[in-house]
Image 1 (spheres, rainbow, N blue to C red):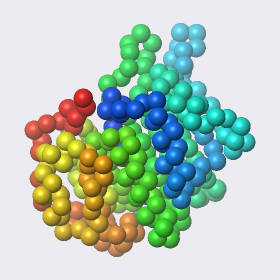
Image 2: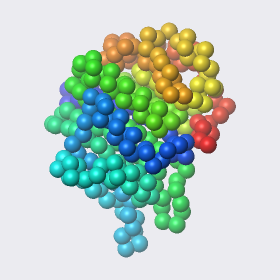
Image 3: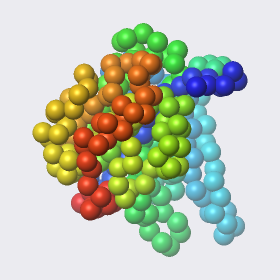
Length: 258
């Protein structure tokens, strides 16, 4: 599945609209609280911004070390970055050589004179295999993903082994997620409230998988208890689950904002 020069890793992504978040003022503090309560931590931050220099729009990356983080009011700073119209990406990182855990928070940004983009925001969480080798860490990764989905009122999300995810996109002829419809089933799948209403909770709760649960107003299920299980990348099994869900293509997922 992996080439000899590649590092096995797991990737997840959540899609949400910030106009669905009720308490925007508390978002940064609640976000940090979820990380602090998890088994993961970060020691570096990168903030990428679009800035106007001499009439030209350019990207600037600001980096903060562990010392910088200790000396700042992190919740206050994070809140400023989130709602700054120039911010493109906020990355929280814990890494050493070929081992890492990171959260990449892509927030909507505005081009000069145009106003905020209508595209959805994303939260991307990833790590190498060694960070989830033990059961508590593995379940902690899934738990943090689900907690973030609930916090952001995400409308869709997935978790998968990176190589298996690429293979899934190749076989479904989809190179990236489109908000028009659900293309495939991944190892871990989160459906927000309106997707659950579209598919029906009866269909979701009766899925022939061991791991499934309500998450906020949505629903999460995984194909196996552990993402490294051998059946996890089985495309036949994934297609069988997808056919049972019968997701509707009548309503684009972009309609799921307020």
